Image (cartoon, rainbow, N blue to C red; front, side, top):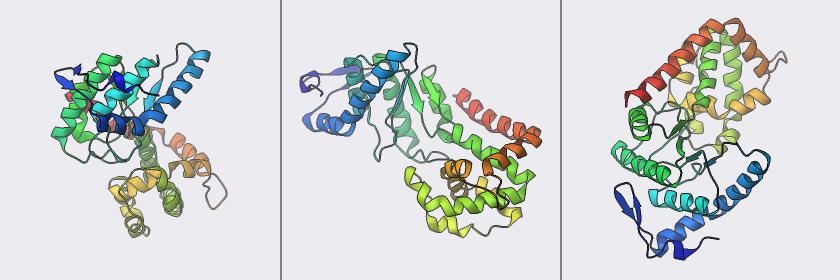
Amino acid sequence: MFRSLDYLGKFFEIGGSRLSFDEESLFRAAVKYGRAIAHSANMAAEIIRHRTDADIEISVDETDFATTPLEHLFVAHELQRRGVRVTSLAPRFVGEFEKGIDYKGDMAEFDRQLKMHVDIARQFGPYKISIHSGSDKFAVYPAIGRICGELLHVKTAGTSYLEALRAVCRADPALFAEIAAYSHARFATDRASYHISTTEAEVAAIANASASDAERLYLDERPGRQLLHVTFGSVLTKGARANGQSFRAAVLETLQIHSALHDELLEKHFDRHLGLLNAG
């Protein structure tokens, strides 16, 4: 349970800003994050009981509304009060961090709030700001690299899978077509776990894509990328080819045979990410 006397009537000097809570902003933060903070504290205590050197990351990014700097301050203060030491924390940033596509939103406001998030992380940690759904957010990568500096963790795992499928698309179009068809069948169910803008109608519109258009439609444009992205779990754990071979086994076999192509695509993909982060 949070203590209102820790917040109301007080000012918090964060970087070059002075932040303060009124009753509404404090209670909104408590309702939004209170249970998650308490659960995280319990989990952290159990983890540390087994591994004192564990890295703990707390993520509050899977919400409908952005984590304001004031709300981040509340989370950080409450974690510190409970003695929870984190390696990184993932806020829900202003704008849209959808899976598999670039950032959508006001870049100037993103920069302004990111600076405050980093100042809070530095004062209450220091811990890293974790950029979840960070794959392909090229428009804001220079700012992220410049503002976060050493206090940065970026998650890009999702589009590594898409680059693997790009290699499959080029090396074995028939296998890719089977995976795409299975993903279409899974989309309505699997999309529920993700924050994306692609609709079922947009996905249906590319269902009969020709082999010559498959890479562009599924791996370069939003509907196809998000379709493949959100269905990856089903594809790799449940899906199978018409001959009974699991998609997981078929993909791994194809990547092994065409390892040079796969390596080339991954290198190009991550060079772009790292290059833009360093450009800041």
